[in-house]
Image (cartoon, rainbow, N blue to C red; front, side, top):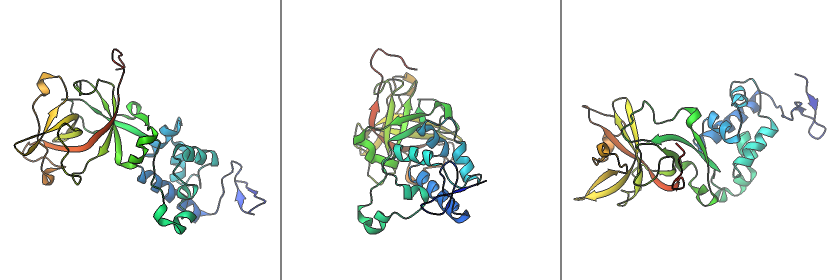
Length: 265
C-alpha cells in the first residue's frame, strides 16, 4: 500500500486518514478495542448494530490483522455513541488525565444496551440469547446511563408477565449476584430456570413466606402459577438429580411498555 506523509508528524498516513506505526502499535490498538468491548459487555456484532452499520466486517478485519487500525470516521462514530469513551482508551493508550487525576476518572456510561433475551413462561431454549435478528438496541435515557455495564435488557413475550407488563415490553434490569442481600417483597426480578441443557427466562415477583424467599409468576397463564424458590448458591449453574436450578439474575428497574390498546407482537 502506498502511503503519503503527514506534514505535521512525518509519519505515514493511509489515504483514509489512518495512522500507521507498525505491528506493535496495531496490537496495542486491538487491545484497546477489546478492553472497550469487555468493559461494556459488548460483542463485535453488538457494537456494529449500535452504530447502525450493516456489517461488522471492519472490526473483524481489524482483529484478524487485515488492517492495522480502524478508520477515523469509524472511531468518531464510536466516540459519538459512547461519549464517556476517550480516543486514548480506544487506541489502548494511557490517558493523560487518568495519569494526572486517577481518582476523578469517569466510569463508562453507554448510551444504549442490547436486549438479548426474551421472558416467556414455559418456553425452554438452549440459550438465553435471542437470534441476532431478534435482538434490539435500546437507547438509555440520561438518568439511567449510570447503570453502565451492570445492566441488561429483556423483552417480554407471551405467555410472559401479563399481570405486570404487556407483551412487547422492554425491561432494563440491574445485574443481581446475591451480594446485595435478598430483594424486597414485590420486587420484580429476572429469573433463569435450568433443566438439564434447557433454560427458561421469566419475570417474577419476590415474596416472603415463613422467612423464606419465593418467586411468584407474573403471567396470567393458569399452568404457570406455581411459585418457585431460588436455588442455594452451591446449586447454581448445575442441575443434579433432575432438580431445576432457579437463579435470580437481575432486578427490573425500568420498563418501556406499549400503550394500552396497541399490538406490537
